[in-house]
Length: 389
Ligand code: GLN
Image 1 (cartoon, rainbow, N blue to C red):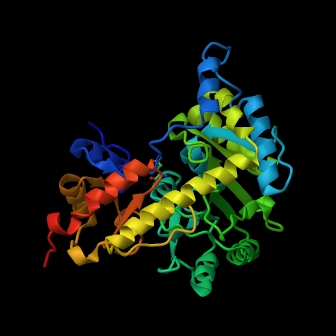
Image 2: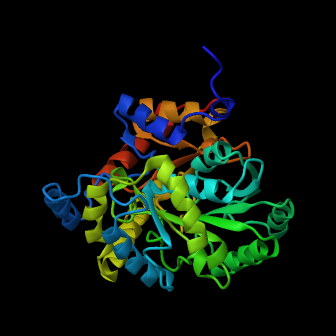
């Protein structure tokens, strides 16, 4: 057999998704890969059932069904406070995973540099490799996960083509303040750089923190490629509905990339999801309230167990400090945790550029009884996992 491509040798399969398989193998409560175990809104399910008997079984328009783009444009115009053109400023993709990949391939040539904050969502590493880009990592410093202005400007001095901005951030839960975003915007302008955003947690933000759309900052519309999805907002991660919003000049090229990558997102699911896109503002307030209650429940439980953790401002992840167990390999720790304690987590090292192996990531997008089950299991953590010397 000839050699397989060298690009596939430089990264592993997703550790997040591997931990879901390991959790299933041990029957662990799976708090690794972030997805809910509660139902999507009933109105979406009812519409999905009805759609199966309607005429939506063939390809939709490659950059998204008209009906879906119109509903999305209406919703995002409301939240992003600028009119979005459904015909020229949207590409509908198979989840934001495809949106991010297509955005990278649209903006970046092989050999170009791309700024990535660390910790980062693991896909960005693979996205960079697959599009031939070279990441420049800029640390977000714990405990507040702030960036250092000089470190960031030094990265911009290396002539990057784009910066990837995950806001609210997975895994650290940071919600960038408007001042921080304006500082990034100044640098993006000064060094003539694109900003590719991943805003899938745009509606999961904890008061008093507020989400600011990067594209809505003065002068940023022309250089921002906004990626997001319906997965987290409507609890439909399996529907794989995402999108890119950007200026017509960018979208024209993104449409071509998307067309040859996947042709299009599933037509019946786009049609059913229109129901969600048409929800009023109450829906988003309720979603934030539900997640605020889950965050409070889960963090209180961790405090009772005396486990040190991050305090997320947005998204639904928490990083736990497990340094007391002395494991040199956090993947091994997560395997032992799934097997002996029965809780699935993601090793922190899969998110950090820096050599970090004392953190694990759990998520709390689960029913309250699932969260209580996980907390009950974690009670035996210190009996079941003995510290290593
Ligand atoms: N964003 C989710 C997480 O970080 C998972 C996304 C995925 O697996 N596609 O766990």
